[in-house]
Image 1 (cartoon, rainbow, N blue to C red):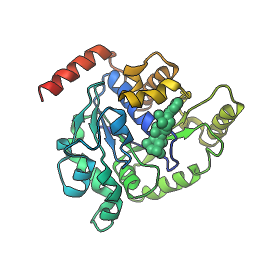
Image 2 (cartoon, helix red, strand yellow):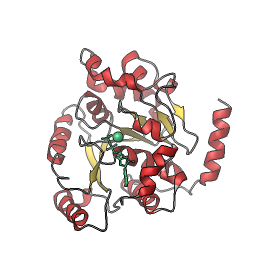
Image 3 (cartoon, rainbow, N blue to C red):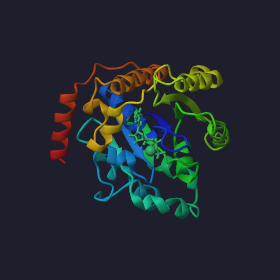
Length: 276
Ligand SMILES: Nc1ncnc2c1ncn2[C@@H]1O[C@H](COP(=O)(O)OP(=O)(O)OP(=O)(O)O)[C@@H](O)[C@H]1O
Ligand SMILES: [Mg+2]
C-alpha cells in the first residue's frame, strides 16, 4: 500500500504546490514510485510540471465527477520520473456539483483505490481552502504535510487547520499530521527564525528539521515546467528539498534506494512517452 500524503494549508501561497512537486521529484530520485495528484482548480502543479491544463484530454475532474478510471487521466511528465493526475479549470465548479453526490467526501479515495498498488507514495496538492476538494484530499490520505511560510501570522490559521484535521478523523480515523515544513525561510531576517521557533514550540518534533529557504531558483523553476531537481539541483532550494525527501523517507521508515540519475530518468521517461 502506498503512503498517501495530502499537502494542505488553507492559507494561500505558503508552498503547498512547490513542496508537492519538489518532494515528489526527490522521492522518485530516491527510487520510489510516486504519483502526484493535482486537486486544485488553479492547476499550478500541473502547469509547474510543464503540462497545459487546457490541452489535456482528461483530468482529475473526469475521475471525481464522471467515474473515469483514474489511470486514464495519468499523464507522464518528461522531466522527472513522476506520474501526474492533472487538474483542469473544470474543477472550479466541482465543489458545487459534488454537494449533491453520495459519499462526496470519498470521491478521491474511491478513484485512487484501483491504482494504489502501483505506487509507494501518492502526494495530493490541495487548494487554499477547507472546502470539499481539500476534504476529499484529507479523506483519501493517511498523513497531512502542512507547509508553513516563515512570515508574520504563520500560526494564525494553523489552529483552525488542526481542528479540521481532528474533525476529519471522524470520517478517516487513521489521518494524522505527518509533518509541518517551514518554507520561504529568509536568513536575513529575525522574523523567519522567530516564526520557526514559535511553530516548533507548538508542534515539537512534528516540524521537519529541514527548513526550505526562500530561493529565486525555486520560484523560477515552475515557469520552465521543471522541478528544482532538474532545474537547479545544487541550489540551496534543491538541496533543501532533497533533505526533506530523506526526512520523509526516514519518517515513513523507508530507506532511500540508490539515487536514480537525473539524466537516466529523463531519457527513460522520454522513451516511455514516445512508446505511448
Ligand atoms: N522556497 C521558495 N522560495 C521562493 N519562492 C517560492 C518558494 N516556494 C514557493 N515559492 C513561490 O511562491 C509562490 C507560492 O508558492 P506555491 O504555489 O507553492 O504555494 P501554494 O501554497 O501552493 O499556493 P496556493 O495556495 O495558491 O495553491 C509561487 O510563485 C512559488 O513559485
Ligand atoms: Mg498551490
